[in-house]
View 1 (tube, one colour):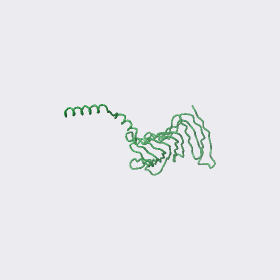
View 2 (cartoon, helix red, strand yellow):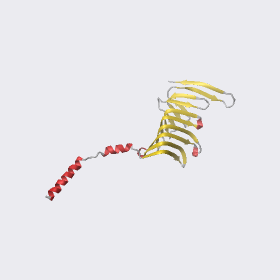
View 3 (cartoon, rainbow, N blue to C red):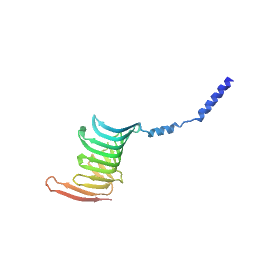
View 4 (cartoon, one colour):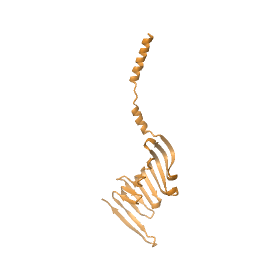
Length: 198
């Protein structure tokens, strides 16, 4: 009788084990979408050769270590010049995604960047920074506004900036006013209206 009861218990346990299965694959995929770390009121400093090259601040940060990605909300940044001595650019965006390995940054939702060394302000919906290539670009269809303190202003579609070559290009229509100030003559200030398109 005891032997039959033991066999019956083993059969019940075996049936129970085959009836209950877990889909671990689905659990793993949901784990991939969860951040490894969530932080609020964050200050993040990127350092190269012991010198700070950029400082990022955000109301909320989510770190995805597996993808080398940090997602930020209500984001602001400062980029330092050589040896971290002075700030040469600063900006804000509603959202940003930083590749913590490459230093690439995608900024979205009300982007504003001030480049101190060039006396330029850029405003658009989205900007993508490629750190190694030193390229800054908007979406191909995005409207971009550029201002300077002297009154120069441009509005164009699809901005591409190569900071190494110091070139600024629009892929679509562009119009604006360029004001040239001549240092040699006091009243020498000229304005030219610019309009270009495909």
